[in-house]
Length: 249
Length: 249
DNA sequence: CGGCTGCTTGAACTTGTTCAACAGCGGTGG
DNA sequence: CCACCGCTGTTGAACAAGTTCAAGCAGCCG
Image 1 (cartoon, rainbow over the protein chains, first blue to last red):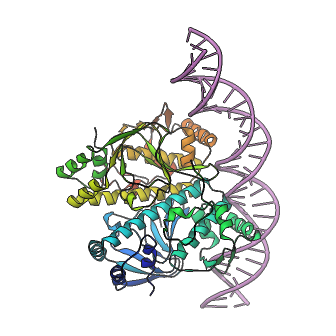
Image 2: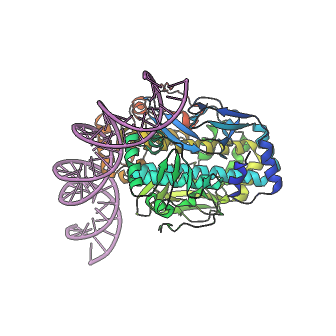
Image 3: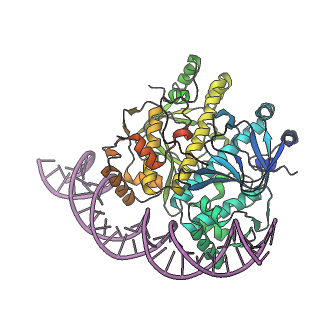
C-alpha cells in the first residue's frame, strides 16, 4: 500500500525515515471500506476515531432541511478527517464516499503517541490542518466571487494539484470521478449549468473529460481562467512556479 | 480589559482559575491598534505572532487579480488568528480591520508555554480551531446553496450567537458594523442586492438595522429563514436549545 | 430486454447584476 | 459658517447569469 499521507506531508517539509516508519505503523490499524455513495460518518455521530483515506474519493457535505446539499470539501487518498475531531461532542456534517473508498480508522491513542514521539510529524499534521483551512477559504472565494467557468476551472486546478502531490496524476491527466451532479453540489450550481459550462471549456480545448478521466492540455491557461494561485496549498517544494501570481496591493 | 477569549473558551468546557490566570498573562503582551479599514496582516506576509482581537471587528479576505474581493470570515473580540500560523511560510490571505481594532500580539513562545502547562487550554484551543473550521464550512454552504434572504438571515444569526458567547449582545440587539458593501463581499452578492434584501427583511419585521445596531425581534423566525442550526458553533452549554433542529435523513 | 443513472438539449423563467442617478450625513478646509 | 467631498444607502430600469422544467439519448448492468 502506498503511503500517500507521508507523500503529502513531505510537501510541507522533509521527513526522516523514522517518521516514515511511524506513519507506516498507521497502516497496521484497522482497515475499512465503504461502498460508493454510502456515508462514512453521519452528521450527529459522536466521533471516536480519525479516518485516513487510503483509496478512493470522499466528500464532506451538509444538507439543508429542505434537501439542498452542499459538498464542502473533497477527500482524496492521504487526506485525514480532522486530527482532533474526538474533542467535539458531535459531527456537524457528514462524510460520504464518492467512489468505493478504503480508509483506516486511527485510534486517538495511536495518533497521540505518534505526535508525542515525533515532533516533526506533529508539526506536519498542524500544517496539514492549516492547509485544509486554506482550501476551505478558497472554496468560499470561489462560491462567493467566481463565475461558473471560473469555479469549474479553479476546482479542476485544485484537484489536479492535490492529486499530483500524492502522485496520483499522470502527465496532464488525472481521475475525476465526480458526476455533473456532484460538481454542481460542490460548486453551488445546477447540474444543467455544470454541463453547459463543461461544454464551453471542452469547446475551447481547455479540458478533456471523459470516462471519469480529466485531461488538462494547457495548465497555465486553465489556471488563468480559474484565477488559480496554488500558493494556498502550501506545497512548498513544487518543482515549477506559477506565472499567474496576482499582483495584490 | 475583559477576557473575551476565556469567556469564549468556556463555552467549550469549564476552565479553572489557574487557566484563567494563564490567559490573563496574554494580556500583558504587546497591545496594538489598527485604524478602521486598514490591514492588520497582508497576504504574502510571513506570520510571526498570533493575533488576538480584544476590541473591534476584523475580517479575513482574499482578493482576486481583477479586484473582486471576498470576505471569508469575520473576527470579533476573543477571536484568535490561527494558533499555528507561524508554521506557514506566508499568509495566503489578508486580515483587515472593519472598525478600529485593538489586538494583542502573542509570541509563539508564550502560546507554547501556555499549552504545555495547561492541557485544558491546549484542548480548548484545538476545539476553537475546529469550530472556526465548522464556521468556514457553514459559509461555504451559505454561498453555495442559500438565497440572498437566507444568507443574510443566516449571517445575522451567526454573528448574534457569536457575540452572545462573549457577552457582547444585549437582549435582542448587538452591534453590526458592516456596511452594505461589506455584507455583499461576505455573502457573495452586490451591495445593491444586499440593500433590497435588507429592506425585505425589515419590511417583514424580521430585523431592525440602523446606525450599525442590529435588532432581532424574533430570533426563532430569523433562524428558520436562514436555516440556522447553531450546533456547528459547538457552544455546548447554551441555556436554551433551538427548535429549528432540522430533521435530516 | 428493461430499467437505471448520467449526460445533453431547448425554452421559459427568476434571481441577482449592472449602470446610473440621487439623497443624506459627517468631516474638512477655506 | 458655509461649500464641498466622499462614503453609505436607496431607487429604477435594462440586462445577464444561472435555474427550472421537461424531454430525450447513451451506456451499463442485471
